[in-house]
Amino acid sequence: KNQVEQSPQSLIILEGKNCTLQCNYTVSPFSNLRWYKQDTGRGPVSLTIMTFSENTKSNGRYTATLDADTKQSSLHITASQLSDSASYICVVSAKGNDYKLSFGAGTTVTVRA
Amino acid sequence: NAGVTQTPKFQVLKTGQSMTLQCAQDMNHEYMSWYRQDPGMGLRLIHYSVGAGITDQGEVPNGYNVSRSTTEDFPLRLLSAAPSQTSVYFCASSRGLAGGGYNEQFFGPGTRLTVL
Image (cartoon, rainbow over all chains, first blue to last red; front, side, top):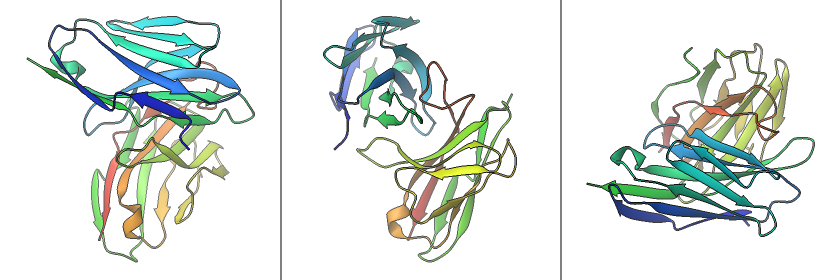
């Protein structure tokens, strides 16, 4: 069973609008949570990395939040642009000798003009 | 810096054929790994290496071999290709253990493999 669940699976938004992606996880013990952006035909690129002590982190128009108590994270995209069309992947690391990574299946965002 | 490079970008194999997917990084990273990405699923770890001469199995290692003779290169070998190995393969590198602290993992552009 996947320990990282993302929702929605996909969404379509108009250029200039905001959207929020969700990530719920059961990974334990928790080390950190990462959000990646993956353009079609490309490898994932890191957006943010948050440890348990951080509850928000921004990277330009991308803002990630983390609630370690409820094991939830969100990624908010502000004033979307056509270039934001991509898959967004939530990744959670488990604390331990190898810091095992668990990957979500991703949310596909399509921004339309 | 080129970052993480992978070759080839596309490959079609017949069942039973063997091949090697190439991966190289120029960031002097100790930690390298191979993932496969299938539709509707998260990336799954195949093999990883914590340094030259040291490799270990990930979540889905069957049918794949790796070696790490240099810091820069981490090839993935398919011994006898099967249709179940049709996937997109990504190589990644990081300065330390990929999931530890703020160690950022850098991914290559991927190899799209089809096994007929």
